[in-house]
Structures are given as C-alpha cells and as structure tokens.
Image 1: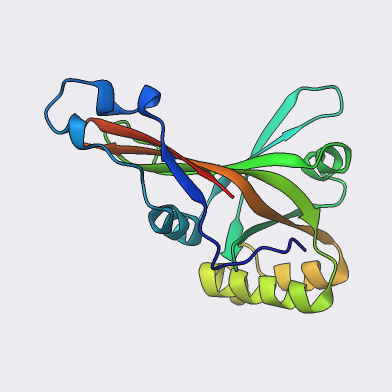
Image 2: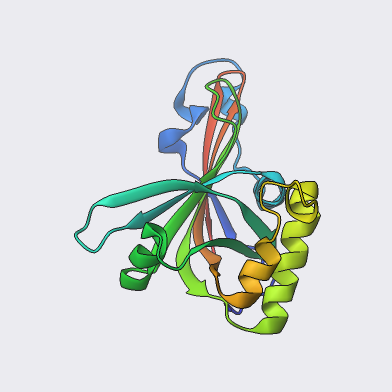
Length: 185
C-alpha cells in the first residue's frame, strides 16, 4: 500500500493558460487556484470515477468504477481477469476522473498515479470500512448492488488497487469563469 501522509499538502498552481484569468469577462481577473481541500471533498463524495488505463498494445481503456478516498489514497477494485487488471499488470500508471460533467458550474478532478495492489488483510479491512461508509446500503444491504464486495476483497475474487496521487488536476467552472489547477504531490 502506498506510503502517503494524509496531512501532506500538495503544491498548488493555477494554470492561467487554461483559466479565465486571461479572459476579459468581469470576475475572470479574480480566478484563483482551487484549494486541495475542495478537490479532496469531491474525491470523498463522488460515487462514480472513470478509470483510464493502457492496454499492452498502447490503446487506452476507460471504464467507470466505484472508489473510496481513504487516508490520502484512492481505492478501487476489479476482477482479476478483467481488462483493467490485465492493463495494470502491464502498466501500473493510471488516471481516475470524476466531476460534475457540466459546462457552466462544478469541478472535475483527475488523479494520476501508480496503482498498487492491496494485499495486506488489515489494509483491506480499512478499505472495506471506507466503502461501506461511503456507499452504505449499496454494499451493506443484501439487496445492494455491490453487496458481498467485502468478502470478494477478502477472498481475492476482487482485486483492490490503491492510487496515491502523483499529480491531480482540477477543472473548475463557476458561471462561465474557468480555472485549471494542478496539484503536485
């Protein structure tokens, strides 16, 4: 499991080239970088993430996953024989993306890092608790979409990966004022 200090604060930069700071629109001159705490709250609350991996032949593979942010690390799972697991065995660098998917408001966040398989039983129990806290009845209820995922994590039927951010990006939109923030860890 990645050794990530949850109290660590990344270097935060506004990229004016892709922000409204260069736009003459009123209010655009006040564009600032998005604080990491705002992006972290998005990672904590988002229900769906888009995982981007690379196939051995170089083609991209993008698929939705559920994920839990816990102690400064983003966790997701897949079946051991699924395409994403095969891709990560070949190339562990990946990106997880989530956000509002709207043109005029919200924040989209991209986390780039290296996926590391979680095998430690105590760490898996922490991840299970994080999933149960975040997704509630979807995991804890016998009628839940992902009921039994904890047992799948424990047995290895589902492979759990941890991605500590190396770099993250935030694309903010507030009534037509845009910001592009980069966080480097």
